Structures are given as structure tokens and as C-alpha cells.
Length: 115
Length: 112
Image 1 (cartoon, chains in turn red, yellow):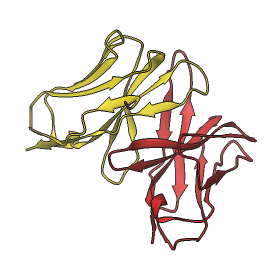
Image 2: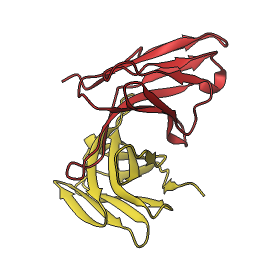
Image 3: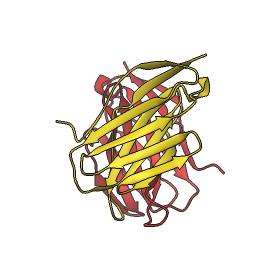
């Protein structure tokens, strides 16, 4: 089972460059999200989507853009990279249910450095 | 005050020790409580899940939720070096589309 697959694993960007972090899930989950993880800050929600064609902002959306054209894919775009966006990024797919509980499945992470 | 607080650690214990990891929270509407384990350079993986108050046991792991005190705990019995990781608590309100709130994580090292 692939679960949540995100690429690239590592990336170095120059300030002002743009890039897209790719994310795909094969669990047919409607809900997908992007988090960033910084030391001492924990995981913070950037953007999320409750289904194809629907996206919304999380806690720290500035400088990022998302779209959701299919259930499987949820790419994250950095519009003009800044050093403050140096972080580890996790794509996640979530299942909800009274019996099964709310469970997030994370990708392996993308380490981004902006110089 | 952050919505979810967690002892940052790091925490070092000898192999075989009982480990207690704790989180406090402020939102009384949280219903789902989870513990995630994250190894270095990896994504978090679900370890335990509980709904509302009470205890849940899974092997060497026990999760406790005390909603009246807004306090959750994860106990690890007979800790092993393979338990060395960062442990994240997470919680959400009930219902579809509710977002999760994570604690900052506690880094645990179990020394052989």
C-alpha cells in the first residue's frame, strides 16, 4: 500500500523561486491537508481540502497555494520562496468516522531549504 | 496560551523503564485524542487513538484521557530502544472536516 506519497524528499530553493510539492494518496479519502513542522512549533496546518474542487486555509496559509482537481492529488505551491518557509512539509490524508475515529495518514515529508 | 501544550523534553530513560508522556489542552470541545510517533526523518504514524474520556491499552502502550482536567497521557511500559522517537499528541472536535491540533512533541530516548 502506497498510502500518501509526496515528492520531492529534499529541495533547496533560492529566495524568490517558486516550486510545487506533489502529493498523492491512494486511500480514496476526501480530506487532505498540508502541514509544516518547525522545531518547538509542532505541526501547523497550511491548507486543507474536504474534496475535489474545495480548498480552504489553515493556520499558516500565507505564501502557499493549493488546488484539488482530483480526489487523489493535492499539490502545494510556494509562490515566491522566502527563508521563513524553510521547513519540513507533510502532506496528509484523513479518514473520519464515529467508529473508526479520526485518523491522519502522513506522507514521508519534504525537507525544504530556502537560501 | 497555546491550544495544546506538551512537555518538550528531551526525555532520556533506561531500557525497561515506564515512560509517561503528557499533554494539556484548552478546548473543551475536543473529542478525539491521538498519539503519533515520529522517527527521525520520517512522517508521524498513528500509535493510539481514544474517543472521549477513559483508558485504552494496546500492548505496552496505554492512553488515558481525562476530559474534566483537559489532560491526556501516554504510558509506555518496558520501554525499548526502538521506542526512541518524538511523540506527538493530537486532538480534534467531533465531526467530518474538523481539523486536528497537534502538540509540539516530546523527544524520547531509551538507552540500552
